[in-house]
Amino acid sequence: MVSPAIDNLVAQLTRLPGVGTRTAHRLAFHLLRAPKDEALALASAVQDVKERVRFCKECGNLTEEELCSICEDARRDRTIVCVVEQPVDLISVERTHEYRGLYHVLGGALSPLDGVEPEHLRIDELLGRVERNGIEEVVLATNPNMTGEATAAFLADRLRGRVRVTRLASGLPVGGDLEYADEVTLGRALSGRREI
Image (cartoon, rainbow, N blue to C red):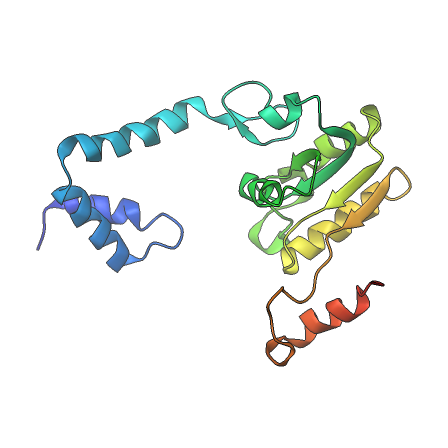
């Protein structure tokens, strides 16, 4: 009942993660009501980011330069590398202000069912960095789900004997209640307990 242009916009918006048809319709009609310069500013920002942003040649983070600001920062501890699946995970770790080492972005997680094999990720680049850069510790910060755990196990196996390999602790969230914790989470919290 609407124009083909609106249908196309809705179809493109539904391709975004977490955007269903209803949300896409709301966004499309919001853009139609917005001043033309506002809507075109959004289109320009999308075009600009697609043209200018690329992956850091060292770690795989997003950057507009050859190296990202983290890799260029001389104050970073260059003996430790935190391995994450995606650049958004790197941002989450950075927000803690607890980690001062370098990063390595894999570009995903192993998932044979989805066709993601080791050669599709930046695993060889990680192994090369460990060999040539004097790295002493690799922190595996993949997601605590099936693919993330499989990726961490694969990496730990490949890195064993070359470097110290650690994994982010997992367990109960701060402010959580024991009665609502699932068995796996509670089990990990018990096995990862530490002295206080």
